[in-house]
Image 1 (cartoon, rainbow, N blue to C red):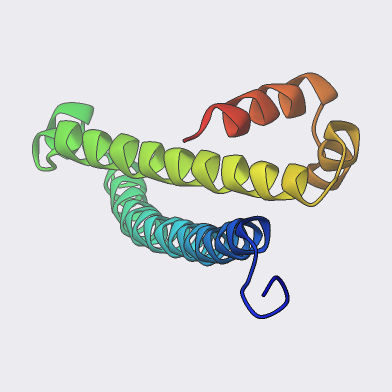
Image 2 (spheres, rainbow, N blue to C red):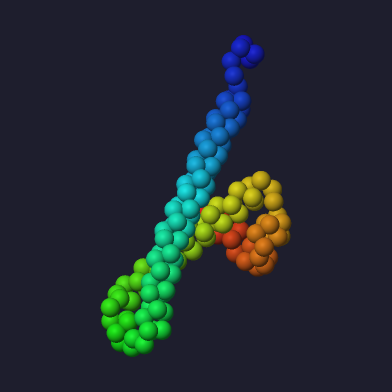
Length: 139
């Protein structure tokens, strides 16, 4: 009888492994989604930078031609451009932080040390420890 039915321990272990596989797939998809978000925000920022570069060229030419600051900057929505650029940079920084946090969580799960992760990312062990702490706090 014992040999024909799975024991409770085997059933629990099998369920735990299935759950771990689901979590791993979920974590993998979250990490991929985070990288997609980073790439999209970077692309938006690049568009803003290109637009700003073109605008700065026009400003320089106008200033070179003798236009006053009032004339040049009255013709452009400077405040709106600045806010848009600041927002785009903040989105990249946020997405980048999320990717690093997820990479740290994954690295720690794979048995990497905080020091090793710090060296790979090229920043201080203190910053790496902060990312590790954040990664461990994630649900």
